[in-house]
Image 1 (cartoon, one colour):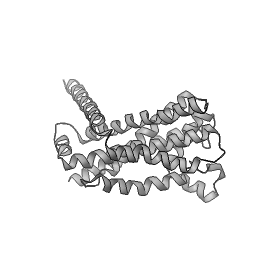
Image 2: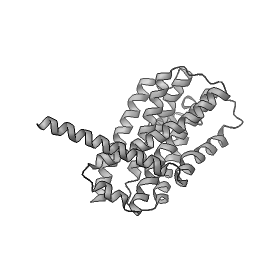
Image 3: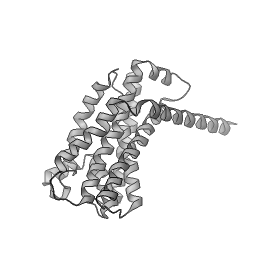
Image 4: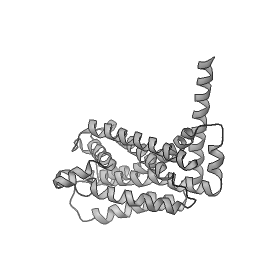
Length: 252
């Protein structure tokens, strides 16, 4: 009997998680903050650094994909949760007979799906327009998936800040996202960084994201696919745990 109740509760929680994800996808994906900070901003930033540089197409595409994933996945939570606080939708969700973890997981999955779809755009451009080849499709899929989910969890973590204005969260988030771009080997390969730069890069999840995606496209990476995968999983768990803890703290 206890196992039946546990299974039924698990199914109900998953259904609620799935419903929250689809609701966010239908309502918030085309909102101006999401489109601006999730797609347009990383695209123009990358082009401003990439145009005129004689780099292999696979290197450019992997960098563009990493930046796009970072901004698109982490923009959903900060755009959705403060807006829902303003219209009191978020309060109704967390007062429903489902756990806070289910609510946050549903919103994380929303950012994950959005980011995966957006990441396919530069990949298709590279394959069709520049003739980029995929050397390891499985590693590339793992890199895109782990990066999208991890950075989506990071956005949910920042969205725990108790505000009803998405711009407040986006401003704080950009203080983290922008430095990550410059220390993670996106514009300057990690092998060409000075020693202190390589040490700093170790603390950035974007480092392992672009390195793993680059492995999928080029067949080689600075750290190797195993280390990149393990550390991306580590950062994802940290973001999920901290996000849940902070949401509970600010809720109280």
